Image (cartoon, rainbow over all chains, first blue to last red; front, top):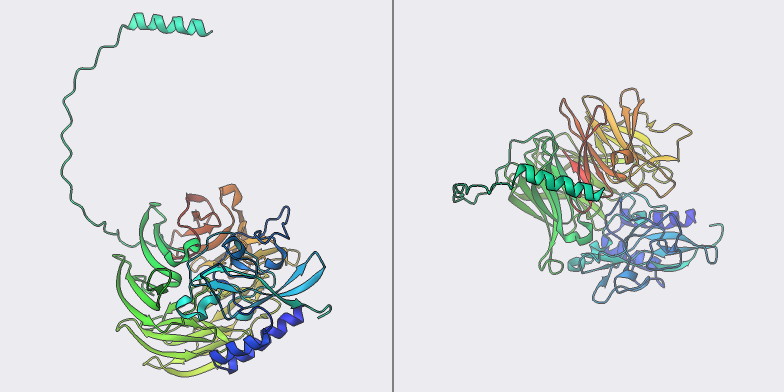
Length: 174
Length: 386
């Protein structure tokens, strides 16, 4: 799990250092192909709602405790007219993403998750959720959830909400 | 009991008699006609604090509240658009806001811009339009920043490729853009140097010429481990540079007074027994009173991934001896966990602290005594400038 995170991180870092932004996005898209069609992640936040400590609601997509939200930061699209894998009507998915790794207690597997942002409308304002497992500061963008990942969406770079799309199982021992 | 009370009242009434009707008093003089005016700010005070409010639940409407830590009054507001970067000029007379607007409020053509506000009037005096690549990220003092002499303003760009813009605030122009691949944010030092934090744990330092173009660059050795114990991107200004605090509570002091950064040996906020148990956290994770040499850090108990949780205590350290001087729990003060701290630099310093409940507390920076809590000073106050 850690090494997989590291792999994606190193890949994106090398790309960021050696290629133009356009080719970086293209390469990331190839890395993530077959998964979420467009990855992307949340905006700046901090010191807000985190998962409840008492009775975690790990199977409710409208709860911050939902297992696949382990590193999400923003408004849950499932509360905003979308779902864990779909943006709300009228919004625009963001074409870049960052990847988290979350444990599903139902099958005891770890999954790679892409946290796409949905963009082009102002803040949804519902189900604010800020969890930060293995999250790193902004100078490590591939593992950072503070950036507005709508930033590459041009005129649709306003942030609305975030989804959480499973990319695949992390092989045991990786 | 009740009957006797009624009897007593009746007797009192008879003895005292019916109260005489008050003689009609002459009416007070009429209120005078008034003149509408615009309030003038009082002279600037060392105890003013600029409260950065991300307004996260309607994020296109961020603002900065100017609050007086002596009178406990809101003095005014600076508008700040969408996911802005904010800073003060070296002389404190100007607030610089790097922000984004959409032509039709929440949608439409995106314009990135740097706006300058005169802190004596709170009027926007001028602006510089940027390329649409401004860093839209959690607030820090390094999203937009002035050179030490005020002649340059630096604006961090993230597309997500990293670079920064060099601006001339006096003439309102963009002088150029400097690529910082793999390194982010603008950490100013001296009149013409900009450092950036790198994914590798190094510091990239770019030196500019008089025209704001790159004259040279130097990459440091790694000074922290970005994988095992990264530093918060929110640095704390020190006498000769900045102190950076790591997730596990290591303090990395960086001297930026020379062409090359110098790194002091890191020291720890926590004892071996506290390490990994007590952690710094929040958004603005420390403040330094430079004359007293006191460092204030919001600390909480938590595990991996808790680095954005607010502090349930403020820990106070002597920067010279690295000794912890005090622990100030905030719950007994009626405060929710703290996400931002700032301290004034005068001889009677006050400590400002913003909580997850959007309250801003004013404390005596020497004793920790709570002087005032301003409830709901904004929606999501995440950074304090002073």
